[in-house]
Image (cartoon, rainbow, N blue to C red; front, side):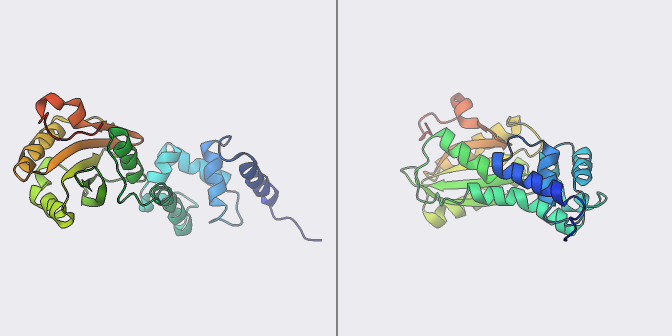
Length: 236
């Protein structure tokens, strides 16, 4: 008679619970415990899951943690750390799997939701530009800068090169606050005004500048319309 391995029954019960009711009834540590089954084959992963939550504060904190920090947790080896870091990127790819190139995104909400998905799993500051034709059709999405960002490193010439590459008529600028709130700084507003004025000379319109944090987004131009060119094209 085959002897049941320690924790095997518990693992199967947790798997069955997930298959029957998804993750809705799971506590954060249960989610990590289930995930770690696939990188830690013969060990109780409940304690590991609690250690991760205790170290990084939340489920999101675990997934956002640096690889080198993850493997500092006792019992977390490279395979487990790699699996943990893989999850946000799979989620991001899943959410962006539909090719939106050529789709019309003509509302603040449509562009904002696209950007929220674009930033899933981002732990560094990233600036993207979304390039549109005159009918709000998305032509391309370009990662402009990644790292520590301030307005002084945003080069309008680099944006113009990308605009010219696809003959775009309009573009959206976006950046994220990985560990903050979707609230623009005064520097963000000044950058928006500077870029809007700079591209007026080339008859290319800055549609919007979004600040994204988690599942929230803030459209700077819509909220500060009076300070910018009210005659330029607008997202609804």
